[in-house]
Image (cartoon, rainbow, N blue to C red; front, side, top):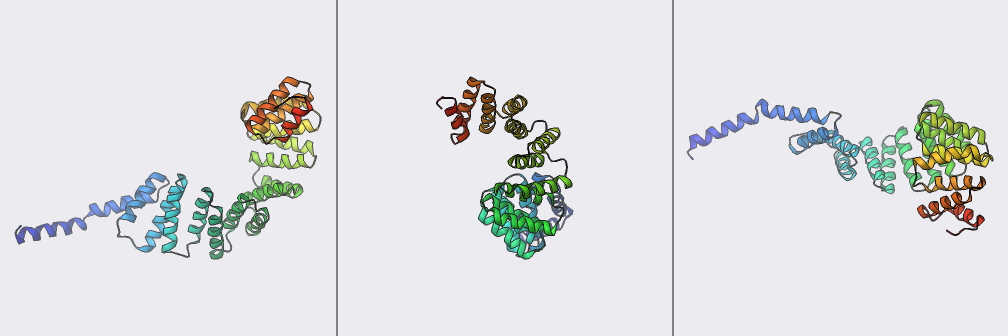
Length: 311
């Protein structure tokens, strides 16, 4: 190729590199990277990251945003890789630690999640969300005491943090601290009165205290909010049963089984009600079905013994 031709090609390449076409490609990628569509975010941010023309400050943002998009699509390993890249470029990025903690928790990597939230808290000690999230992962490990401490700290930082009250209430239930649980669920309800499962949780706590009328009222409100809430039907049936009102309990128990026919607890509840109503054959069938689904059902085993039946 002659020197004149070579010089012309170099000149054309330079013009193309600086042309609006290339700038438009970056602008298009940037527009995608900041949308609410996860697939578009992944495509746009990937284009920007792979261009090798972005500053480290921009790469922190693009990596984090792409990680967030991966997280929303349950692609947690890829999300962790992107959050890690954002942290590598900016070790003081508290939100990236918090988000990586979420992805680790979703994968069942609870220790790693706790470590991430602990770092986020060190960077942002006023982050109620980080305390709440760390508490969730302590709870997942069965460590309710540190979980309660974290939820309490989250509440101290954000007194209207409804989720933290709910989760602390759940931890109190697991610790058989029912009065404390009721206080927490009541606070959640005051803040957000339209969450069905919180009424269900409080109904359960009332039942554990023998306060069946209040428990039944909560389950009833839960069903107003969510008419297909099987656990609320089962819970209300059980509390009617404990009150000795098995005729009222049976329709709820039957509805719970209809909604969740593979739920061992609902079958066991209905079996006990059938037994009290002297419907022996139906009770035996339900006890046996419950044990098939969950062999560790001592109440079902006891029911069969009372009825003189074998599993």
